Image (cartoon, rainbow, N blue to C red; front, side, top):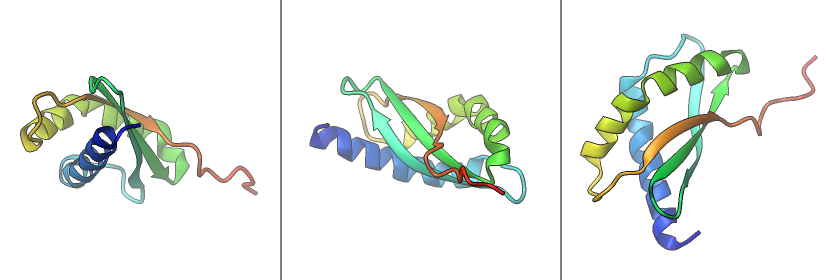
Length: 102
């Protein structure tokens, strides 16, 4: 990954975090964090990885995010000073789920 892509990832993560805080209503008692942003080398697509707590809300919150992706994309497009803003798509980050639940 080159420096430009790394900077774009950080910029998208920072801007999108603020947008999500104000624009997306998630179920009470749940928390969402952007854990990773991966922008393709051609800058056409960006994968946004979100961590959801508690994980029982994974499916519901992912649907909310993907349903609102167009709205989030529009706001992001207006905020970023880029010729083309990559298209965003959300995925649940499952790397931190506790497998040893009792």
